[in-house]
Length: 332
Image (cartoon, rainbow, N blue to C red; front, side, top):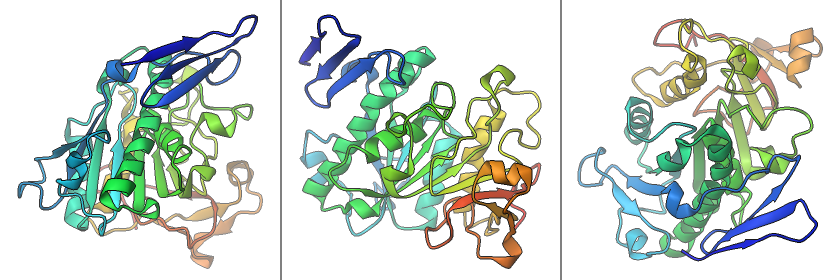
């Protein structure tokens, strides 16, 4: 792996470059103040799942954007939509949460599902994993471009679903592709280092990263209170189930609220629970909702569903709804 580090003299700005994903600047007192690890150390993998993959949704095909036959000879089909799933800090693609979402997608629709696993880079200390997310975002962007060139995929047909740091990875990917992708769904985007009015759009997931960006907030408390997400509005449609901070039945686990976004989203995909997560209240901004200013009752307007069936045909803004304490969470 070719690696070049450039440090300008008498400057707080320096950058590290990797031959396959480009350069990453480090600017002190901004969101990007730490160098990421190398792609080799992060160890990102891409695995394709389709309804026809070996006749078993549990068996995937490894994809490498630098080896075109892993795309051209795979079961990838550009006539289908493409869903790219990305985990967050300390996570991986193993376990029931992500395999459950993958299986729900394939049962619902005949789509391409690509699981992005960067667990080696995600298990580092948070500041380093946060920096590593920039590299993974660039890798995802290069994969999407390879799918376009070698697989005939259309950018508009790409839908990234990312949780925690994975949500911001989706933003980095969307801002790095040659053309704008169709959609990014941010599931409780990571808060530490990303929250606040001073954080610029290029630092995190933003509505400019895709044609449609929808966000679910489930753990927006301050980090001092155990919150791992954020309350800031990042997309076109922002959903705050149960107020966006404390989820029902999450009393004894610091990550329960944070993970609920995945559970809600997966349930919104599943055909076994056809209930729709319907908001009750709309507001132009979350501050408006909290103050009761300029809010509207969703019974008097066409509010979008929260989750997979959210749609850009509905108004932008923030939406409040309640969920059940136990599965099924949807109240309809």
